[in-house]
Length: 121
Image (cartoon, rainbow, N blue to C red; front, side):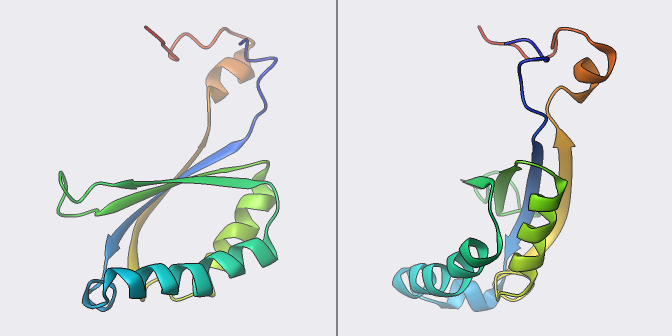
């Protein structure tokens, strides 16, 4: 796909570390907390966002998980962060270590180039 065909979505990598409060819960309590406190807030306040969640505690002591979000635009991303900050996810169940936000192949779109750094083998 050329960069002209691709949408300029916003991608955010939210690097988090679990807190003792989260780890003290049973697995079922964690699922219940997430599905009753976090997901409803996101669904109520956002549109045009998608996510994937990656466990990284096997390889990193600083970051235990990476939550990858794609948003249709910067406003959708802003609404997502505002929603998350109003839930126990933010700094109660997880410490937000870093936010890395970008646009896929932004350099190529800016300069009208093919996305040479995107590789599939």
